[in-house]
Image (cartoon, rainbow, N blue to C red; front, side, top):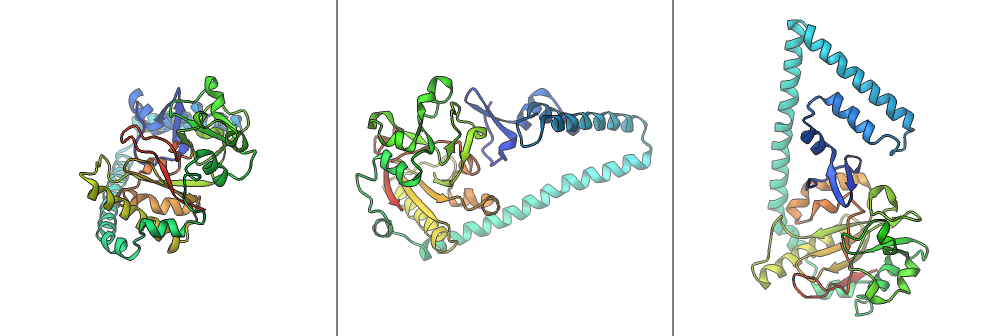
Length: 323
C-alpha cells in the first residue's frame, strides 16, 4: 500500500510498521461506498487519538451508523420527488469538481507562463547566496552536528537522525537531544533528520509523537520523475530553485533558515513555518515550481543533513546558506 503523492491532512494518513497509508485507500480496499459507514470507520480507528475525548468519538461513530441506517430506510421507501432531488444534488456535486479542476488548470497554466520572468527578476547566483548567508558556509557548517545546533538552539530539544527505516523501539538511540547529537561521534549521526522536535521517550517517527514543527522544508526535486539531461540542465534547475527561494525570502517575507544541496539534483530549503493558512494557499503551485508536495504538512518526513554522501551521485550534501 502506498501513500498518495498529493498533500493530505495528517488526520487522514497513518503510519503502521513504517508504511504510511491513506484512510480513503483503506475504504476502497474494503469496498466501502457509504459515506456514513466510512466516517464511522474513521471514528472507530481514530478513537481517542485526537484532542477529543474517546467517549465523544464513540458517540459520533454511533451517530454515523444511525444515519447510515436512516439512509437505507429512505432509499427503500422514498417517493419520486425525493429521488429526483437526490439525483439533482448528486449531479451538482459531481459537476463542481470539474469546474474547480478547470479553474485550477487555468491558474497553474498562468503560474507556469510567469516562471521565466520570475526567474529573471529574482535570480540568486550561488556567489550571492554565500555572501548573503548570515553564517559563512564552510566545512564546519557541513558538519551535521553544527547544522542541527544552529537550527535547534535549545540544547534539550529531542531530535531524530538516521536512515529512513530507522524508527521503532529497537531504534530508540536515533532520538537524542541537540546537545546529545552535538557530542556524538560523526559516524553516529545522519544521514537524515526531520524539521521537528519530538516528545520525550519517543521511539517512533510518527506525526503524533511530534512536539513542535518549527520549520517547513521545500524540497526542490524538479518535476515528478525528472532527471537532468546534463550539467547545464542541472544548473538551470538550481538557478530556478534559488530564484524561487529568494522571492519567498525577500518578496513574501518567509524567514529562510538554511539551504542544503543534497549532493544530487535537489535543494532543501528550510524556512520558519509560515503557518498552515499560508501553506494551504501555496500547495497548488508546488508542481509548477518543482517542489515535492509530500514534505509539506508532514514534518515527520526525513530530509537530508549536510555532510552526507548521496548514494546516487557519490557527492556530499553541503550547506549553501545558514542563518
